[in-house]
Image (cartoon, rainbow, N blue to C red; front, side, top):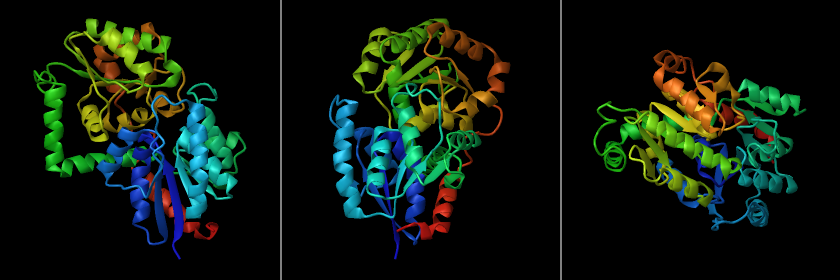
Length: 387
């Protein structure tokens, strides 16, 4: 009899990082893979699933406008328990550190169903940075019987917390698998590639300055809850200053839908000629944008992991990161959300070819594109573990 694996996720980053694992598991006769989405991010989630050709088996559709964490948590818990009871899986797999991740793992624990945690062990050791993600992932590590850690640092952090060594497996990060798969999809789909080129020329590079390499594209992403308020004002002020220091460069910012992001961004950056504010992009568009970028300024975790494979330097606009490997090898620099720090560091990278080249060196410390394969092989070896 096939062993049932219930995979639960709800946000775009989770979907991206779980997509290659879902596709790998569906190829295995030993497993029956059931996909449940919460749609914590509705539109952005659907775009990723469509891109990778994944159809959810269960769609809880819990997204509501401006709902609080408390409301989200209560709704999720009420929804998950009946699903887990009905499916009766041998294992629940979750990814990362979202509210969906924590609550689905807790619901599985309450039903005595084993939990596998993809991207286990990331830590800042500050439960308020990022908030609430840091505490979410710490909780899940206590619950999970299988901790799929992406790096050696993650393994060490799990061991330091007293997590059972036998439950920890170093696999690499599935985000690298997803990026390589995504690039392959774009390269082999002529229609998609043509649409992406048309979108880029129409929405971003109307005068062909970037295509002609007369200017450099600086990609910006920002959405972290802990930066709401003054933090985002500082980030926007820094971008405004950089746009005046480098008038020939094009600063492209896909603006997150959260009003706490939209308000300061459009207020401070809305009327600057070389700052292009665009709607949130889908995964294929983001990969295409990244491939055209010279430098990335971000508070995103996934981009820190993806960019090294593309040899693109990254400035991390956070005070702490749970992904220290990129900082350690020099492909990423931690600049916080302080205006002067962002401007000073970006200026150095943009004006020093030597520094820029040094940030392009080395292999991606987060993975080699085979993490999903390793996880599947681990699960196949542990078939007896399943109920």
